[in-house]
Length: 204
Ligand SMILES: N[C@@H](CCC(=O)N[C@@H](CS)C(=O)NCC(=O)O)C(=O)O
Image (cartoon, rainbow, N blue to C red; front, side):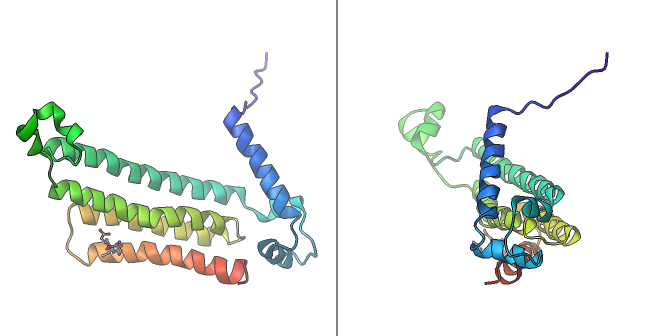
């Protein structure tokens, strides 16, 4: 007997699908909204329909963006683990309750201190937050802005490489300007996407 597989959506996925359908459906009929007017211009149409919008949006590119975003988010989350590791290894804590297992009173107080390894990893984490979050948000709008697949892929790959290199350069640490340059590459990639969105896609 031939097996028949049917993909079963979880409740959360179903909710997301419904929200997306409602959202894009909503956008499709807001023909006065500037981004939809811009997309309509590309299609040389007066009014955008939901079908037009689906044609315009490259689903494969959304998945590519999701892949790089998830990889970078996981990389960023690993910084928390690394911070915890260095806190335990170097016995450097910021909250009194964290030191209670090392003794009481004055004995525990000496573990309430800053440590250079912990601080370095915390700075990497903070720098990730400053750069990866804007990339994730701007990158999403970029991939649904009708940009060519290869151009978007180049942006995502460059940003990913730059951020991984930034972490390595900061962690080891490599001599400057290694870290500075890798940060600049990532920053320029996000800026390039923002620039296109503001000037070409949204016609601001
Ligand atoms: N918040 C950053 C803004 C500028 C930036 O991100 N610079 C890069 C290249 S020098 C960097 O790695 N900064 C070190 C850091 O954020 O800890 C800073 O304070 O330095």
